[in-house]
Image 1 (cartoon, rainbow, N blue to C red):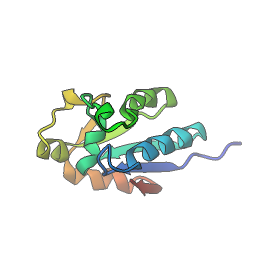
Image 2 (image 1 turned 180 degrees about the horizontal axis):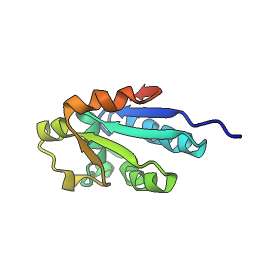
Image 3 (image 1 turned 120 degrees about the vertical axis):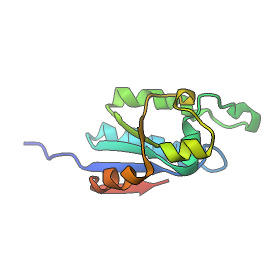
Amino acid sequence: MSQPSATIAIINKSPPYGCSNGQESLDMALALSNFAQDVSMFFIEDGVLQLLVSQDSTVIDAKAYYKTFAALEFYDIENIYVCKHSLLERGIKASQLCIPVTLVELEDLSKLLSKQQHMMSF
């Protein structure tokens, strides 16, 4: 009999460029999913910028890893939460994001996170 999978929250707070946190969190999510872990991704604060569809990483000679977010559905990572407040603060609309997400009110984030067994913040 197989063990039940752990619930793991990957919390993205960092902007997409300037450090490798965004790429590392995405790589971690995909790897954990390969090991049948129940992964949920959270994008808050500057982490919401990782999901913008209008990124031009060639200006700073960086990899455009945001295109890989589309692969999340193939890895059965369906719980992708974005903080509405963080989008509003940055003047971003949900239609500007590169993948479908669930918009969450700031006060509901802690409820969702409390349901996770493990959390990793990037």
